[in-house]
Amino acid sequence: MSVDNHLNKAFYVASAHPATDNVAGFAALTWIEVEGLQILPQLGRTHAINHISDLKAGEKIPNKGAAQGQDSTATFYTVAGDAGQTALKTICDDADGIMSIRIVQLSGPDAAPGTGDAVEYAKGVGHSFLPNQGDDSNEDGFTVGFAQHGPTVPGALA
Image (cartoon, rainbow, N blue to C red; front, side):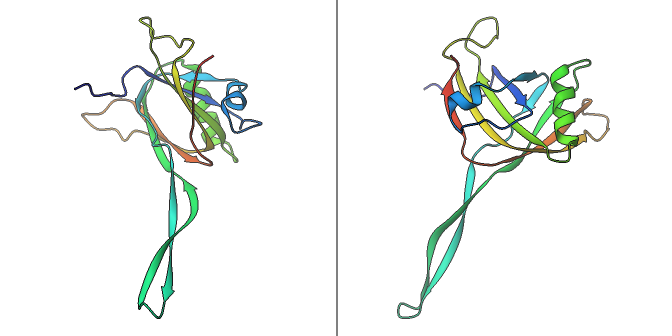
């Protein structure tokens, strides 16, 4: 049995949302790779559950309500001079935090993105750039928050 993992994934950011919420819209953005990725943000949406009272049956019936994007963190170790980390911090420190992310499953032997590589896109808000708390067993790095807005868009690099 083969088990997939998250090795050979690269993380990219863009400081804009796509004009259209599809692969073509996301692909048109200007992307910059962020080095030092340790933990990916959790993508997806959850839904509110509204409970509707049914007096005759004497119970509340669950009903699927509005969707809300995940708000999760990504973790990085510091890579001195990395333009992607600088861009990510700038986005998260911005008052609006407009951000799109691209996660690429690298398939080439040189760990470079290539045509046909699986990709996930998401848009949302980058926030809460927090340096790691210093102690005797963790590296110099940081976490950032990503509050997703809209669905995750899967695709492949062209």
